[in-house]
Amino acid sequence: MAGGSRRDEILAAAADLFARHGYRGVSIYDIGAAVGISGPALYRHFRSKDALLAEMLVSISATLLSEGRRRSAAAADAPSGLAALVDWHVEFALDHLPLITIQFRDLDSLAEADREEVRRLQREYVETWVRLIREIHPEVGEPAARAAAHAVFGLINSTPHSARLARADMEVLLRTMALAALGSVAATV
Amino acid sequence: MAGGSRRDEILAAAADLFARHGYRGVSIYDIGAAVGISGPALYRHFRSKDALLAEMLVSISATLLSEGRRRSAAAADAPSGLAALVDWHVEFALDHLPLITIQFRDLDSLAEADREEVRRLQREYVETWVRLIREIHPEVGEPAARAAAHAVFGLINSTPHSARLARADMEVLLRTMALAALGSVAATV
DNA sequence: CGACGACGTTAGCAGATGCTAACTACACCG
DNA sequence: CGGTGTAGTTAGCATCTGCTAACGTCGTCG
Image (cartoon, rainbow over the protein chains, first blue to last red):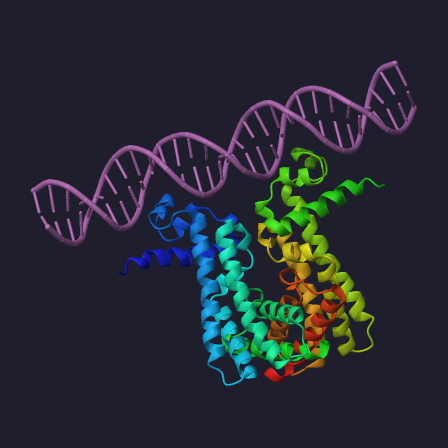
């Protein structure tokens, strides 16, 4: 059924608006106008404004996790697994710039249940990174590895704030910096 | 005059609330309640809710800039100047965790004029970094250096998302990763 | 053809929110 | 003692916003 096309159109428009003005800074009228319908027509496609955001955030974190697992598992050894994770995250961040912004800015606008679901997925994703980091640097403690993973996310997710570089150059720059940062972690023990 | 104490108390409480729920997720009643007064009493100290946020953001970026300039200028050469910037930014991020969150999440909630003022200060701060990066790596283009600076900000500003490490350890970890990331930039040309 | 389901419209309600108005309590000072 | 400025109170207005209700249109299909 191609009936999902309108839903997807709405999701994309909403993502763009949320990224620019924040979840609470966008009304359902704004979202409707962005796809050519007006206001409450959204409720033919989504149960609530919250549900729209929830679907967005859950799908982001689920995609990050499943594809991240797939790629790192396909690697021959730990270092190339970590490199695959870096490549995947960079690729995702550059392809879905608005979603990256939303995920770590509007997460708290979610209802308890959905927020927990997203947090769970994010935690598992982080654990994928942590496991590989500690496999490569066994002397690094788990909290330090987790903090390092978050730091690399921050580095890669900085895209929305710069993005004045050609995409290919940006890809190389972020990957290089991320790997260098990860490689330095062992020295901090 | 110690009359500024109430203002400062309000600013601190508001920063904390804004960081947790976002500017638009906090009402003036919430802020009032947080300092033991109720609602509209805030207007004895600030012209508007916007003005409160504006003062916060301008003061953050002004502090970052002026102290950043001071410390990097005091360094003997470019590499130690850049290291001084890293240290300063790490120190600030760890000391003012809520402010870091607010600055790059609620900037768009500001009125045109104030937002421009903050952006100007931020741009000048970034330029301080860019100049030093290019002095060390002359073969790196200006856009790449700027993107690299933003990436390092992202790395350091990841603090709010982790922070499970003892402060001293976090300081070392972030500084090491930031310097390693910066050192790798030349390899991307 | 007529029923129906999908998708859209406008009107309007209920609650939250920024801000003003009017008033009060009190410290300070000539 | 009376006047003044500071810092607080509550009541209430105007606006915005999420959401529901009631209704219209149209393609599909038994």
